[in-house]
Length: 300
Image (cartoon, rainbow, N blue to C red; front, side, top):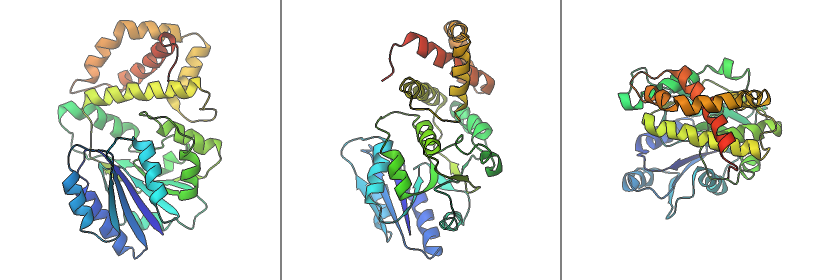
């Protein structure tokens, strides 16, 4: 019935595996847990030991790093069942009935079901506050609101999908980079697959440092420009790309490029502080995408 698939890189997934396995057993379903270690440098033995102690569970340990997109494809290829539950390594279910909530949707008309993200109320250390603050504000969103624009907030850390649909969509993604959730979302929309959001969240525990998160934001924008340049985002609900295309249409992108040149250092100083301003983060994203678009000839 259910294949639970977890790509992992340098993260201890023991608690996640034990919790998911317990819930699947309690749900009284046919299931398997398959993990793919993408050439990690640590936690390999702990993860293997935890997985080897459980029935219906296995781990593939790679000798090369293939990236998250290819890792998910490999996991899907190995999966025995028609429904796939993809979880990131750094999450933990919020509900004791997390698996059961998804199982109840297997007879629905929907092709993909997104459970959502949650964050602990307690603030993390100051060096990770940006990721936590962004997540609390823009990712910890009730399903009712997410369903108003179902292709907009697509977070691949926790989603339930028909195997046939995943393979059709994922096979079209042939790039290794951060930020490809935007492409996955656009392909779902362009192919008219039915998406449902539910309140079946996972807590996001693996918060990056603000420095690393800001770097990932920039990588995501480079990927977004690659999608834009290649006319791959024909239909989408991506807010940043929508604003960027309007800004570019009215030639305001030149002003935003100048803004980036003048103020990017000052904005970064705020974003990396213990009290980052999320409006400045949004402004930084827009100015950065304009800067990259005007100053880089080609995004590959």
